[in-house]
Image (cartoon, rainbow, N blue to C red; front, top):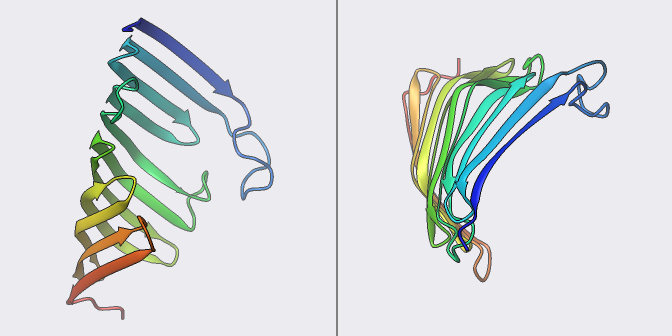
Length: 174
């Protein structure tokens, strides 16, 4: 059945990070707003997280279909570790998208990364994934004045198998 759906849920958390994690003591307020719309057969998703992390997850999916068609995008201006200070590593202009079905989801990721011991880096990758393998033919890393272009294939259907190729150019670690 195709059930109409219009659900909005807001969660306000005063203390989101467990005390066992770095920066887990004290208040870390966050608000999650989740909106599910359209119908159960053609589900629209619009989620925002604000507070210690600002991010949005938008898209659509068809959860009643066997091959689970989906088109989802996650975007954040800045995320890092530890979560509040991002002193060790920080990613900005983060975008992750997944589009397709269980047979092959197309995936894309792009982000600018830097940190205390991480050089300023632009990372982008694209490929396909399913229940048996991950294929990333386009990995592009720009850092230290140069580039690392790569492809990678990982399969776990029978035995774990992987294959990767790298081409490095003009990287200066000095």
